[in-house]
Length: 325
Picture (tube, rainbow, N blue to C red):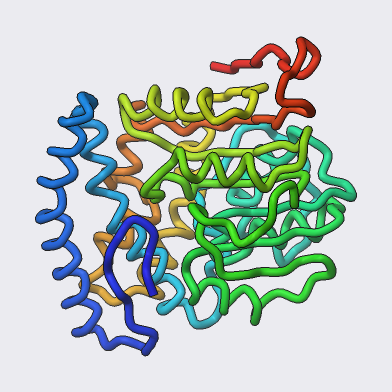
């Protein structure tokens, strides 16, 4: 099995602590080795910055941790892998079993509430452990929800854990969608694209599977100058940006409020020698990732984009972009 953004083949068996430690050390060495290659490529493209290199370093290790969660969490305590959202005060009416994941659910709700999903066919690319797709299917009355992820262990978990009418999961690559043209009314992508090897290719796939008039609801973080690169990629995607929001402060508030639960899960689920990188992955207080969001070095953005009804378009099909600071 391959994780997006890495060349590592990961074993399907349950690993011992010693085997996990050896795999992490091997991965670290590969990242160091590949960084020189990546940096030279970036320089050749005249876009070399320390910010872009920093994200290039982070992405492969993040991919490993997504896979490890599937191996370590045997009791389905982790069904969301995003950093959450806080601060709007909206009452979501969550059921008791969903309240532990309130902040992560709030991020999904903030992203998808830009349009009504009632009766629509929805695709989530990078569905992870399926919590977001399940929330949408159970609360927002879509016609159908399909989740895809490159991690086979995650999809295996989703198929076993969820039984909701209209909700399904499939193994699939964000850069090569298994669906035909014009298949969905809405495509959702939450905190997943930072691991993709080719963002432009992913956006072409989003546009291809969207029906005319369909929406792409997107949220993710970027480091420093990579924020401007992301905006250019979205602007050049052939989709129309109708809303852009900077939600970094909301994400920081969620991480701060949810810190005790996240730290407890790391201590409970992860072998001691992996606590430090696991805390980084979880974004707990004091980690580099948490501090980069607090200081604004890493920005978290939320976008709404739309595929035109007609490729020629007119003024009514190209609305003004709404930007929130």
